[in-house]
Length: 119
Image (cartoon, rainbow, N blue to C red):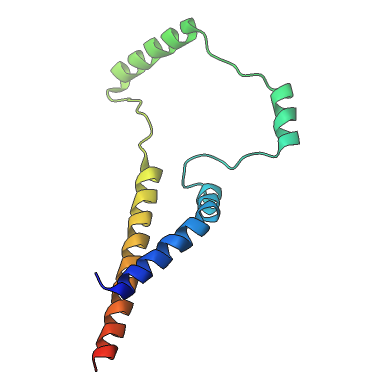
């Protein structure tokens, strides 16, 4: 690896480490991590006081399971599935694309500068 390429990678790593918190905040606020941004403290406290967590009883869950089984038998194909992690796949794909574009840019710039210095 040439010295210019090492310098380029070093600068890229320094830039990423300097701006890591801001980049993480942008990704978190965009909703790509699958959770909403944090609520302001006073609002959060007021909501916690007003609303208490509710957990369904085991009888309710068993009855619901039976009802869904009956509905599936009647309609022939009602299924309940967990949500698939599309957001995580999207985040990884976008991250890989940005990384590939950055690498391609560094390589192209390094190659063009090297070619110009050879002339």
